[in-house]
Image (cartoon, rainbow, N blue to C red; front, side, top):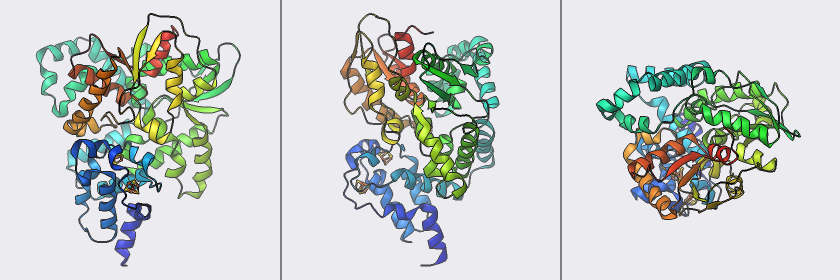
Length: 433
Ligand code: SF4
Ligand code: SF4
């Protein structure tokens, strides 16, 4: 084998494709195979393409581009694979290899560099974005832009997403997430809260409610300043070096304090955090530190259950369903706790939707860059939501939350159906504001 091919195999993590025996058990679990019906858009087909590149049968890596772009990265295929193929690693390596070779135009390259290097990793920059969004809402510009039809003219259907973006908190409220919130009653755990980048800028209210719920359940909650973005958006965009850099920064920041758990409230971020040890497995000086970090990383629902739940008030009966976050289900493998918490609320009837484990089509920014493919998956999801006749769709990830809100708009159901993050739903039931 020539040196170039050997280097390419290493770059593509070709060895990870070895356990794939081409059985096809993963096909029915794959949303893109279900909606597109093409072998190249199935897990088996994508793995085969990587194999063929690694074996020198395909020499042009751009052949990988569309199948890998259209993969949601939901990793449902991993959960059904009988030979334990690590599809997530194969996908990540393929995307990074494609990105390294891709010739972006100068403006696109500049935009990507600014977003991935300067904006997402900086809490200051994300706070500025959050404050700018608040100004946009409160100044009347939002109303004007919506009324004038300008939003409909935005590229990549951004106007449709803008319409379902939740209101942001004021700059004054934004600056008030306390560094330390004591446990109410007897202290059970000390936790460090992971704020995230998008969660903190756009969904600050959910972060504030998360801290209050954890305190109510018996946790001392610490919010450390120098934490940064988890790196999930970078990994999805094929920027592996930056992902590793962010992982190292977070590990170094959180190991400075002694806590029982590092808690997050976003399925996608949580999935990244629990894989820092895999991500840094080739770096001997970091792997043990990464392992300690991942061992402590938990979704908020896991910690609330460990604390014994929450004191809920009694409200009028309501029927709800739960849109599972793929990354929480397939990577973190957290499935029972959110349902357990929902079921523990008086007068709440929980109805599981059909294909509950199937991705909603959000997948990071997949719904923006692959709008049509994403909407096909969303429409299928909404059919199952409608069958439950629920009045509330509960989610555990910001992307799923926006996608569900978009689904409600597409169905013209905003008067009878709402989408809430689990934290919002629990806070409402516990009368925490
Ligand atoms: S990834 Fe797993 S389930 Fe899919 S074809 Fe390969 S071995 Fe079979
Ligand atoms: S990650 Fe999801 S979309 Fe991609 S191949 Fe696996 S099941 Fe299909």
